[in-house]
Length: 632
Image (cartoon, rainbow, N blue to C red; front, side, top):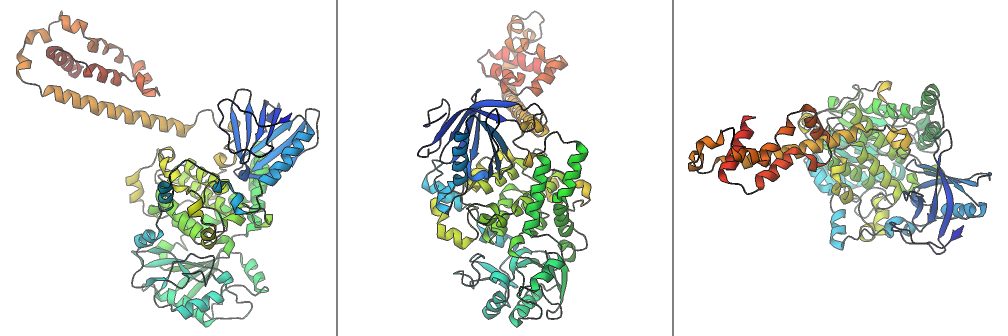
């Protein structure tokens, strides 16, 4: 029955829509249960969330912006099925008793999940009760000028250019760009006119020690025979910016067949005859449409109920998803093209759709293995340089053919690195999953829009909150318990194994909400619990040790007072000492094990000793306890 939103004990609801809906007697089906196991509860529809509360008061919140597709199935004897697929790979299957109610919710979700303008997104109404100064500090947390300074630019070969200060050359690039010192403004302008969407070659990453660089740009408008002297001079200026080598690699991330087909549309690729000292190579990464189709096949396989192991593995292979990830890593970590080995300039030449694949490559750098620094990497190479988050993530009601999981592939590529090198990354997979969650949630302003110019026009820093401080405030949750800082610093270059068996299905990404698919005991959570217990034991031990040293420094005359009493077996003080009585249970092995495994620090025997030590006791009794403890 549909009625006005009512108050529910223990729930804090977001702003409510006019005519908001409450539907009772709704079933939530476990999609992997062979017996169609379900939970009965109430479904609420608010301005920002879909909320289901079952009979045990467990809440399931679904943000409207997370919804990718809503499907209303044919009416059955038990009710009207409603299936919701989310961008964070949650799939919920409701059975609504009445078809009319199901139809109303279906139409409402279609409208709420596809806003027509940016100001309808959750980020513009989200209010975490944070003061204005804190909000502004959150946006200032990452300074890209400091990141370039860390890399060693500007320097004698590279300089900061103001050519794009007002976005007059390329509106999808940031204002501040680093270019070779020998590249004049007319050369930059001429090169931009010869490149798709004006994305001329600019510095993306610089290796201070080897004076080598990674640059980025879009495809040239060369057609079958066109050439541009300014663009040729631009590449030459980049080449001489590396004094150690006189040639550079130009890597085209597309398959050669795709690049040749683009020639008919007036685009294409560089002609080696027109550019001096370049070595050209096609990588073979498929376009956004192939990647979108590949992910859809993967989700169909992973969402099939009662699938055999052979059928699952066969479907996983046929989807091609892991094969695409393998291609990305195979190129960027290939010894033949290893940038750290050749120590030269590399231009990674992409279409706008694949503007950030080189970020896989940068994760070999030990700097980006730390949580704070990978946020800098995302801010610079994805957000600042114009990855089309709005189009690729379907933030607004637009062309569905523009949606593609490019950023998801990046996060999954990083996750595969953390699996092969579990000791060198400070953050865990929960950190990556949380970033993926908020790329699609539209709760924070970081990922809204398609470029920096658009974000400035939306005034996101004035009207929304940044995700980064919220992630870093909870950084303790995202610490990798196996992280070894010293080992990571010594391992300067990661050389991952690119054999196909090293690529795994990321269960916690694609089944993170399907709890029946997870082990009953999490190894990660167990390690984190043991780590916390060890830290507490070490703290308790140090406090106890400090107390014992302090008592041993007492005046020497106390040691001579009643000397025989401290060792006499019938000592009344010894018999009545509560400290000595509590020493006995520590002797059996099973009690020691229970102390280590207990999650409650109140059960810790060492904590009890500290409490006893803190009590006011006669000096002799305290000394007796100290001697007894030392002789055990």
